[in-house]
Length: 104
Image 1: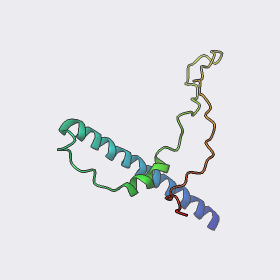
Image 2 (image 1 turned 90 degrees about the vertical axis):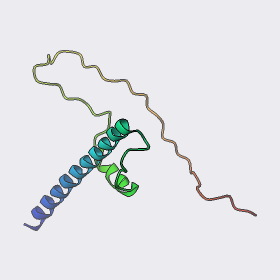
Image 3 (image 1 turned 120 degrees about the horizontal axis):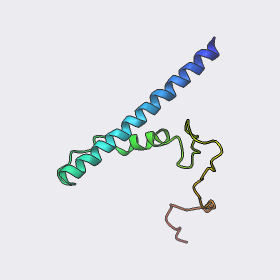
Image 4 (image 1 turned 60 degrees about the vertical axis):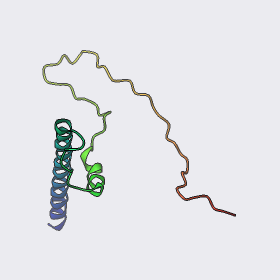
């Protein structure tokens, strides 16, 4: 019983967090519309700091842009699928020091 309750609570927490992330994205969309209407000097402030943007960034875009599309109903199953060509980019494995150089 406890395991089931934990799993249900985890699922509910993830759903609520994803919903909050999407609402956060809508706030940014409203801000972009206000910028377009009023200009950069007269638009109202966004109303939250970058800490909320960072907190929701991982939840807002759970699916990548390279997700495989599922065929729609009524589509010929023998039709050739066209996949977008992507160029694989090798991972950059290098250490980027952020400290100032040491004076010896």
